[in-house]
Length: 65
Length: 559
Image 1 (cartoon, each protein chain N blue to C red):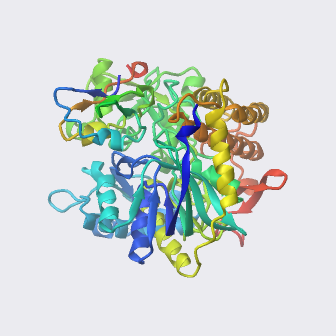
Image 2: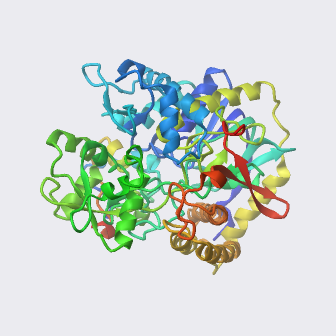
Image 3: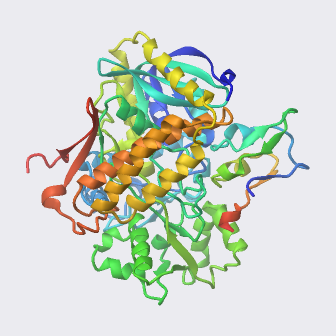
């Protein structure tokens, strides 16, 4: 399911949350980013392109596999 | 849903208010900024990655004097050929200006740091239609929006991200601002402006995509025709809403970017291995073959006639050319890998994608991006009447819209806030937030897509469109029952209300046009009829409801 965050690489900069055109990400109580609304992902890969730590990979939605 | 989501309104003033920070919106902002106007951009997502250019534009169409392939590449020729891509429903004068000025805008982007040339200073150009080589391929097109957003910020132009504009503010026919809401915080906003540039993109989510998942559209799913709908409600003229375009994409993989194989020489074949485009090349002139809509119409017909499924055959394309489009869209690589397809050996099944309302289907403008309402300018894929515009149109008309809007602002004072409408806005949103047990926007959105695809899709006829209109009018009543579970869903509720209105426009215009042209195929009127129908259908809100009328195409009035 898109997008997948690698927790070992994510440093919590929140750029993905800022830029996502579909507002797929949410911030939890501690300010940590979570990909939450995955059914609304457009697979544009902006989060993957802009993540400074290379911590995001956009996978295919089940319906596309 | 609690009322706490909705926060009190704030009033913001600008000389030029830009609604939508995509390619056209950024160009309009930069252009108006050069005229020293106080410019503000309001964007539903984030300007850095919003609109059709979100993750890049890799091809631009226009006349490139530095990289000309011959004397036949003139703006006049460009306009003539591109007008044919919409079967003559186009503004040739405006297309000529786009063809001529595109290169200036590309050079401007180059000045901002956008790379349009190869390492050795040359250009990569491809044939698209006719004799000219109009298509410039840009290898590093992925960062275009990042460059534009930085340029906008460097010029101290204020950006308000995550704000959806819900309606235009008008005073005695002049557009004087807009009402909006922050989709994350619920903050209500009232904008007063001397002039407004509307660049909200095409309508991408009115039709069902291949997977059936609401947001799996080939182009940005949040381009929901908000601008079209608010312009209509403000009494502004729209045209050509029955038209649009569609793509073919790999089976269940709704993503744009696979038009390139046709230009690069990939073959489209049916289940018997016959060349699909050859069949349609017989009825359509070959200059139209490269237009993105034609392959999708052809594949749809092959499947309907029992000759499907259809496939792309990439096996004859040289390796270095394959890389060009695979690199542009990483999701295709992942899809092929996931499905175990080796495009160097295997055929790739292709299917016709959802219709998008665009290519001159939108708010009527002239070559200066002026609409029928003083103070309102439109550019990008919300435009109506120009024709096949895409990125080249967004760059040129966006720039022109900003310049003309700034000029208008110089001679028109800021309006007094029309707070009565602001209160109505708040009331409308509150109703959605406070209602419980109603219809969820997701369900209404899917239902609309099903209705549109069934009755106003690739094949249309009188009975189908009349059936569709009845269903749409029911949906309009359902919109009064929209209810959300959380504040975030409010945006989808507002979007779906706009989409239902657009659905009605498409259906009514498609019913009126008793001929077939571009993507508008009437099984009861299968032939193109230039004598009666080389005309715009104008849509406007009148006292008694939606009014449709015919209008001559610019440049054809005298004939």
